[in-house]
Length: 399
Image 1 (tube, rainbow, N blue to C red):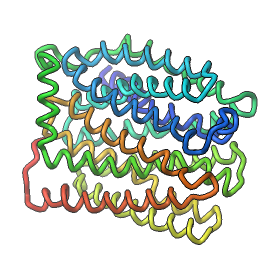
Image 2 (cartoon, rainbow, N blue to C red):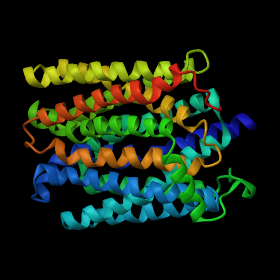
Image 3 (cartoon, rainbow, N blue to C red):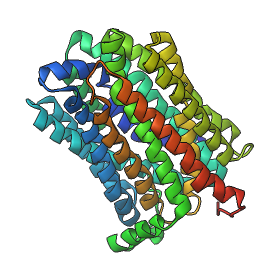
Image 4 (cartoon, rainbow, N blue to C red):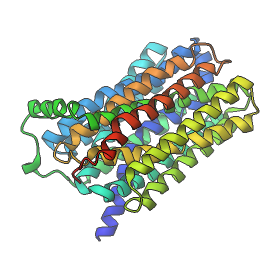
């Protein structure tokens, strides 16, 4: 019975944390088409990604503290219900301003699923077991970016981008129903007394230099990853002239590497230190960023460009799983607030980078390559200065 409950928990939490890729990746093949329908520039249509990311960043700041006060279940149900309603509203958006508004609300409320799912993981596990558990979440989560753009591309064959948001509405409704039957994981005796205590927890977290190091590391990665997300459809469809369906297959293949990457910390947690796995992922991501820049500058073939991304993209699963586990070890009591900061700051960084990718137009991938390379360099610096340095000094991190 325990193993069955654990499997159900992993699947549900995996889908809750997958809200971000579901809300973004499924409609990526439609971005160039929406560009024409709304009659706006490339940067503005990429703002529809940013609106969701910024909403998710802000929403997590509220979701974490609220879940520490009220328990995990009530804010989770409310968030999923509002996510479903705002997604439904996207379907009837007749102009870009209204669509951006619903996308922001969609991100704001969808954030409750993301941050509370991570807090539940910390409620149930710790140490190396948390790394394994979070790796399992990343594996389930990784299925979303594989399937989402492929499904989105197929929907475009028989309909338009509104069909994508209709399917997202159905998914949101199913998640809402599932959370109603989900067991509470935060006992009343462990809950924060009021919002003021939760805010004090956040203030305490911002004074923890090691914790902030992981926050900044993930900010840099999300800047890299969302630059890739927002620019990939234009890179492959407008520069390499592939169809939306072919692009969805390319994107799905790259996303499959995220699932494979997630298996690494799941297998080696407890055998190889998390900080070593994290360092390896940071270095390889930088190598991939350098190779991608070289491909863009030299106007390399599509095969080489895809290969360079295959070097970098799977590192995201290893990086997120190990960084999350290491950063949360000292913060079990304020898991909601800690999860909120770990989710909101990186999401905000990623959202702010998305429109910059298209600043030179849909036929120029250089801004995308520059942001990716710079983000990877910053990741390496943060890892060396803020994370590896702490472990080299022999600082004891409570598990």
